Length: 212
Image 1 (cartoon, helix red, strand yellow):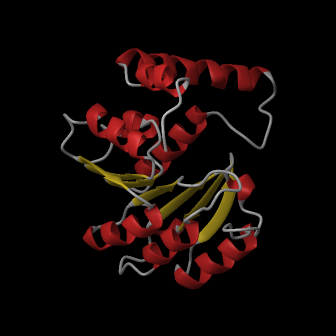
Image 2 (cartoon, helix red, strand yellow):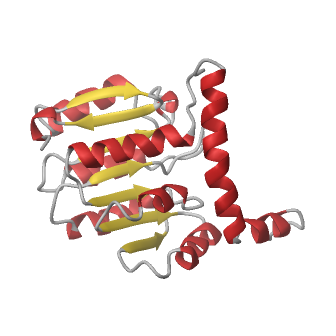
């Protein structure tokens, strides 16, 4: 697809370090404004999501992060020093190439371009320990690979990964999205002893007994 004249300056700006600095500041401002307004739902600020990943990583002593939906790399940027290994998949070629440039000096960050429904099943067999999965490769009513993502994770021999799925508000059973109840039944069947919670627009699937 040809790049429009309007997209060229936007992409040029997003390729600079100043843009990343601006976004880090903007995340704090977004969070403060959200609190002033009484924490309206269902959407929550990115800072809340960042803190959720940090909390689960610390509570469950997780050293490997697997992300679908790299986007502009903001989540990796926050978590890059908290994990021994990070794997991230991005469908968009420009965004994937941007992430490769951005994290070129970080050999523990492994970046992949493609459909996560196809790429993730190639990554999961390489995982040798319990991991934190941040599944965010979906957008509104557009096609979402969440079913394929979950299927390959649940087939992995390690049975107590921690799964965090963004944008809980979209999981209503329509299109490519499972309903929350379907996800709950799926998790109970595949990960016995696990619980499914929905908080801050994030679906959390984890086993409380495996907390270390």
